Length: 120
Image (cartoon, rainbow, N blue to C red; front, side):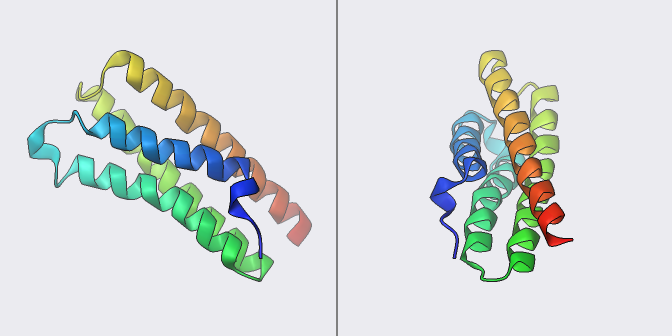
């Protein structure tokens, strides 16, 4: 079993979840069951799937959960871009969040690619 707390990808994903919660707190009230909920769900999915993958014993299961986390991260990136285009986010806060999303994608993708190389 792997320790998720030692993974940079997990640390970043956890930061993303916190950032998205803070960011969506100021979204319009009518978005509470729409974009706010979707973004929060996707944001929580990323670190949650990394944690679940780390708890799996096989390398294939670990990789599969990391890929699910990456898919949720890409989904969140789209939702974030939509929120920005709808002017739901403050410019400074959205710039920081976008940088964090990009860095998290790079780190998680790097981890996935390294595991694929060792697998095959």
